[in-house]
Length: 421
Ligand SMILES: [Zn+2]
Image (cartoon, rainbow, N blue to C red; front, side):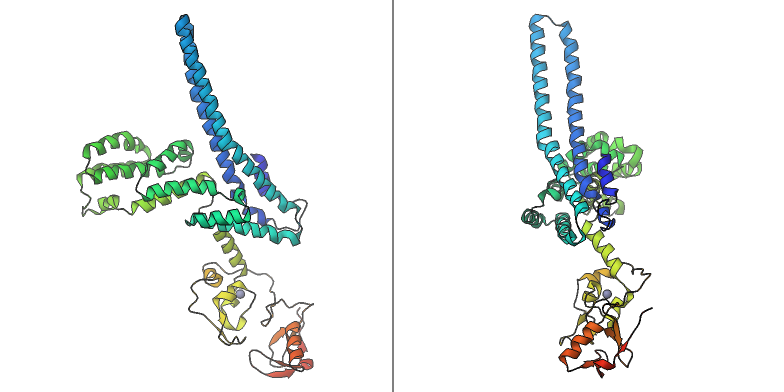
């Protein structure tokens, strides 16, 4: 899969205008289906290895058999080969082939990026935002919303609906206090979980043991302990030792460490452990991509001026929601809105300020950048605004401009040009 990694990390070659950063967010986009293909490949390998061993044994038996018996052995061998073929076709048709088609579509989607002109980028980033919104919805339990958005935008192959349906099925089972589904998933992914040193399987086994103890099925709990917990001694000795004593305590015990084991708060924690394990297995980040993108974007935009009432920039999303104009819409009266519970400005409080080596001067009236095409003009009181904004004001007021901050009036032609060096 070197080719995929090359694409995700490579610089765009034919279109150098596009920032390289666009590709940074796209690794999970390709790695998630890649992991699924690997899983299908491992399932195929497992079927082949297991059935071939059985066939080899049958072949050895065959040489020792007489005519009639030999036919019976041969018949059973043919049945085994037929069964193996069916299993392999099943994995290919339901798993490998559709996942490879998804990978192809995703590669084509990323390839588009390389061919786009800068002006066409917006359409592509709109699709990306839809993908991130679907990802966020899936992770937050809004599966129906995610499905509707994916269908309406025609991006079903660009989002992980199927994977999250599996996640949801297992989460719901854990929500019903059943470990069976999650343990079956662990068994399918045993090697990968061991490689990632995931505590999931042990925690699930421990939970099943706790439930037996809660039901006061002492003998069954002991059998379960011997069969499923004992073998984790190398990695979870302290927990196993503590669990051993659990059957001596009733669920209403006052002993803190056993209260923690009997606590039903373990179930939501099991869901979190399962989420961490499955995200890691599919190379998905632990938080929605939307969070990473928002965090990166807000860090780039947030400057101390965003929280200064005198420096409101109407085009800045951080200023825009951390402050709002008062009822009459006056530009000079900007109030901090205590009733705003959400908004990007509120979110931005959690990220660091941007580091700007070079300042950009922005007009407080229009929010547009002041430069040689839209140079700054100064009132006699020293306040500076863009030519565009003041010209517009002068045209509407017979050549008179009013400083939004001090309300002082002045003739437009007497404003002084300011030169930025
Ligand atoms: Zn701002």
